[in-house]
Structure formats: C-alpha cells, structure tokens
Length: 184
Image (cartoon, rainbow, N blue to C red; front, side):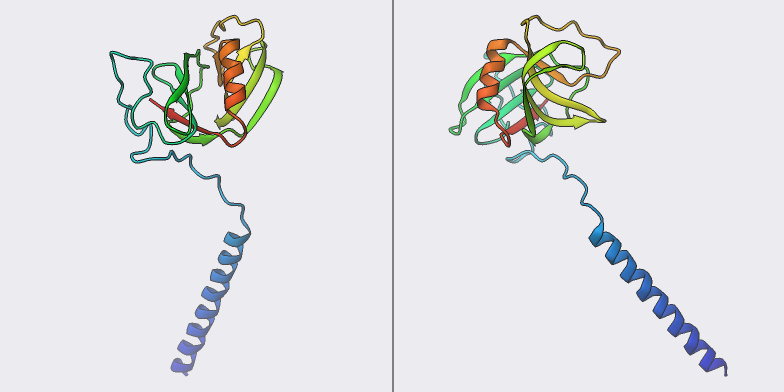
C-alpha cells in the first residue's frame, strides 16, 4: 500500500506542477509587454561613455553619437545637433535644460504640439517630446516670448528650451519617429 500511496502523491504533484506551469504561461502570454529600454544605434551605445569631443571646435558633432538622420542632445554640454542622413550636422545650438535629464541612449520623437503651456506655466511652441522620466515628460520647446527660462530648481521639469529660431528648425526636422540620441 505504501507503493501505491507514493505513486498517488507523485501523480498529484505532477498534476499540480503542470497546472501551475500552464497558468503561468497563460498569464505571461496575456500580460502587456513592458516598454523597451531605450537603445541607441551604433557601437558602442551613444552615451555609454562620454562621447569624444573636439575641444578646439566645441560645436563639432561628437564622435560615436549614432548614425543616420537624428537629433543629438548632449546633457553635459547643453547642446543639440540636427544631423542629416549623410552624418553631417545641419545645425547646432545651445539649449537650457529642465531639472530632469533623460538617460543617455536612443529614443524616437513620440509626440509634438504646436503651442501649449509648459509645466513651468510659460507659453511654449514647437514642442517635440521623446521620453519621460518618473512621469516627467522630456522634450524640446521654445518660449513664445523667446526669453530664457528662470529655472525653478524645486519643480521637476523636462522642457529643454531653445530659441524660437532653433525651435523652428527643430520643429521642421524632428517629426514623429525621428531618432533622438542623448549623450553625456
């Protein structure tokens, strides 16, 4: 009788494991996929280390900042490059960052707005968004009055402010899906 009891327990255990495995498989199949981690193109990943700079020409496009048509944003230098398909910088300009920086890596433009009110209460235009950090939306924009923002370090803001002229250029260049590479 001990042998049949052991067989019965083994059968119940196997049935339980199969049931749990099946339920776990179904749950995994029905669960929404987590958002992909940002990936930058080109080895090594842009921003993985500080991109090399030509210190004699600080406006020069940093090496290892991706490939193809893209926006390159340096969080350390507060500078943006609009890069054409040939890899040449079409325009570069200084920006004033918000209080929240995006992590280095590759992103894509996800949404745009012609005119809105920024999280700091300032009317802004040509908003080009590409990520969010802890619920703070990160994107490029220009103040309608073209005044540089007075930073409020107590509030989390993700607006990367540019002049109106640079905002116009960004608006024309950075359409939905355009690659944005963030480097150090």
